[in-house]
Image 1 (cartoon, rainbow, N blue to C red):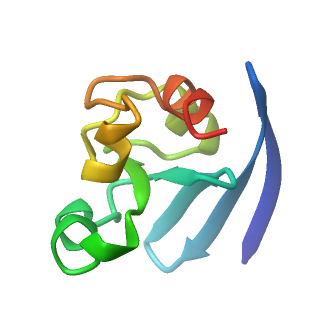
Image 2 (image 1 turned 30 degrees about the vertical axis):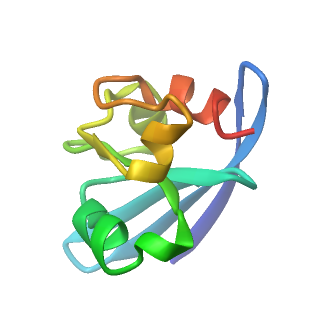
Length: 100
């Protein structure tokens, strides 16, 4: 099952995406500029093989809900995210503010 949820945050509203899979749930919250995602996000792949796309994204680990993803510190971010001032350790909601 796929669930789409408006995710209000200071500065705007993002779109939360929850994908229920066997034994795991994929979580992402996206804006028009970039997104944050659960531990399934491969930041190294985005930075290395897809570098030319300039994807603005961050990864949080250990989250099980969209709400937790908003509050969790980002474990890693893409180089394009760093160029916007988004850094590891930043809360998901704070990173989203910089993605509008």
